[in-house]
Amino acid sequence: AIAAEGNDPTEQLTVFHSADNFNVKHPLMNKWTLWFTKPPSGKGGNDWSDLLKEVVTFDSVEEFWGIYNNISKTSDLSLKSDYHLFKQGVRPEWEDVQNKNGGKWSYQFRDKRAVNIDELWLNVMLSAIGETLEADAANEVMGVVVNVRKAFYRIGVWTRTTGAKGGNKDALMEIGKRFKDVLKLPARDYVEFSGHTESAHSGSTRAKAKYSV
Amino acid sequence: TAEPKETDEPALPSAALTALRSARPIETLKGLEYPEGIQSPNPALNPTAAPAKFRYDKDFLMQFQTVFTDKPSTDWDERMSKTIGDIESARPGVGSR
Image 1 (cartoon, rainbow over the protein chains, first blue to last red):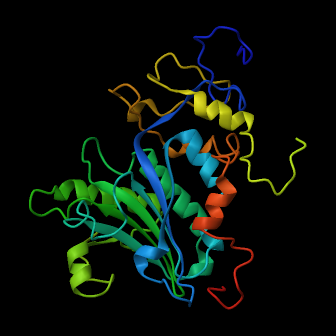
Image 2: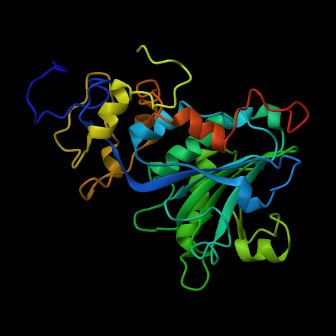
Image 3: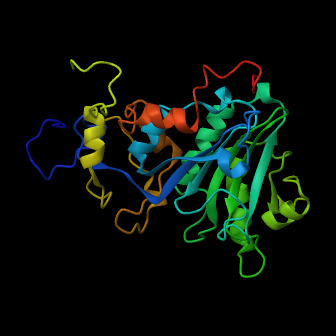
């Protein structure tokens, strides 16, 4: 028997006991910041850094859902929009000093009508904030991103290293495997990893994959 | 409640938002009881969890979806229009699908 209106001040009431009167919340292991890239408007001020907007920072499960339930779904966004969910203090740009030695796992969904992008992006966000994308103490995940483009949706996981130079390749491969599971991809499809530096030098985000899984 | 609609005064926080702001982070999952029908976080994910450092599985997290639905701040609509913009009123032809 659960007493939602109990008078015991030490009683822990979760949002499941009382949605309007809970006194404990579920902390996240990290604080996360949601960012949005606005599509270029056709008018001035279209530098990418001007288009990248910090939306909100949160650190509890409850707050995540308050945000998710009151924000545009990915499938409703205009072309050239992105959502980025990154650990607080990390800008979702490869130029950020914390990303410059890193890379990303990503997958492009080319048949946009066949894919439930809202469900996939939600599942990827939940695996990030729930800290199930990597094994204990790997500390590689920097953030996750979804890109809305004319020809595809793309979801990515950004990592701190590329597995080289002090990085942990096993940890990176494990993240790739878990990411592929979260996206429910069949074995014949591959998620691909590339380093940010290579992407930058090739002038394209479609640099040659360094690893795939 | 008699406030005019065009006021710049921030709206009063909802009961859920007030609870969210004052709630304490859970320190330990041990001894925390959920109402019947609510599944606890997968214990296998938290064998040696430090205080307030937990991993949560998707099934656990999904249970909150219909439970915490209020806007997460009183200035949420304003924040949305400054960052993401009003999707409904986007100019036709610009990024239209």
